[in-house]
Length: 222
Length: 213
Image (cartoon, rainbow over all chains, first blue to last red):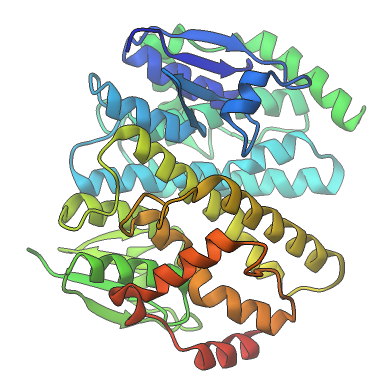
């Protein structure tokens, strides 16, 4: 491919970061195009007519949509530093947990947008999700992928790092408690220390301010 | 090859997704009908996270979630491939699978509600059908070309379950003149020998879903 691939996105979207991490882990040069979601570009509407959402990955003239599908595509086209295991069963396990993250992690965003009774409900849902991952998902492994990071780490990394920020921005009690989720706490610490991830994490204080302001606009003052 | 077991329930379209893939690839398997009101120790052991069917057990290892199972079957038994070779075509296939997972199967359950919730379910269903009609099929016979693929299998619930739901809910959304491509696809899908021989009976399904709701 002659031209560099392009990534259409907004920061600090966790879905966009999933793709950034995959590209950086494989040292793939790309051009980032910042979208204004209040005024979607013709490019975005052309390349994601179904959902009109970011991220969109443009490889040549071909658009790939949906963050984890983009990550799998990148893994297939650029096989260096593989993100999926070779063994079909291990692959199936990785895919199971990616699906789990996709299906259940919406509670974090619903928590972000709610207050009162709804907030309590979504907090509880989020903790149930974390409990399942703590018990069945991460186990005794360093990463979901075993000794090295993989696709499930990318999926959960974007959930948990943003959850840490959001629980602070919401400011209504801890959700991701260290004593309740020791394995996950150890895992996210390892995840954040992976050099490529460390260099490509939005700055925490900035994020907290960003999400505090967003929340204020969405739900008003508590 | 180690033996393959499938835990399922007969009215479940998710169960059938796996059956169709197994049949299309000619993989011998043993089927176990689960009673979801009294889940077997095997099911609880093999799917502790969701406690749901279908579960595929291959050489003692269990794989859960129908689409994850399909991708596993595709990788382990490459004959009669269900996914395209080209990575971009595969990404498109996965996109449409995700679409039906999110929009299709979630909506149908709400058909059995009433009032505002049912109205919304109908509206969402229509939008979903329109999107598929407009963007997904194009001029192709099946979602990925001339042959049945994992995507067609994911949409296969439309072949029998949708008509049953519409009948019971007393709504008619999936009209041939509005959705000609989808209707053609459904006919072609149901005509495939392996699918034709492996569809649950219409009448039995009516009775089952009527009693359930």
